[in-house]
Length: 136
Image (cartoon, rainbow, N blue to C red; front, side):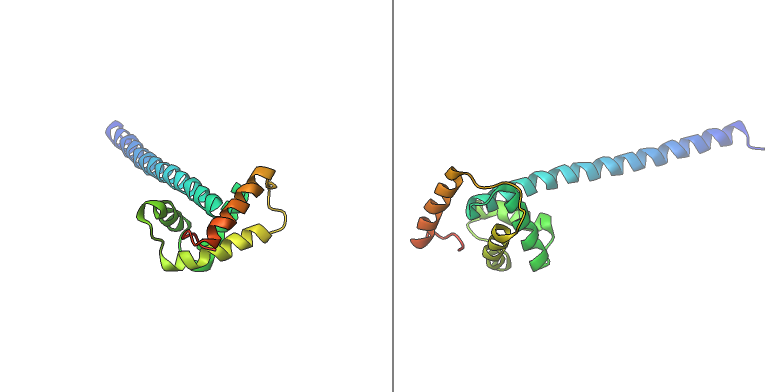
């Protein structure tokens, strides 16, 4: 027969286990939020550089990660830091133009470009021709 003290100890152990599990879950959720924000920012960089829609930017980001064998959040971190550091790891720099082209060519990509987006792309093409430092 289990005594009152033993049951109290079991309940305390269960609560402690639950608290540990909840703390771990909170930590994982915090990390997921940080990663999500970082990935959203990286999509913005890819959209700006490549003149893509956000859906195409997401496709390009995934393409870079898959074809360089670098974790998505690490690719995202490098892309987000690129404007400030003015350098991008060589492997990502080489993969970016192919990923942009892949995303542009992919059938069924959600969202069509507006007339304004097409104008911006024309401006970007002109910038690329004069060697503004962007890949492409």
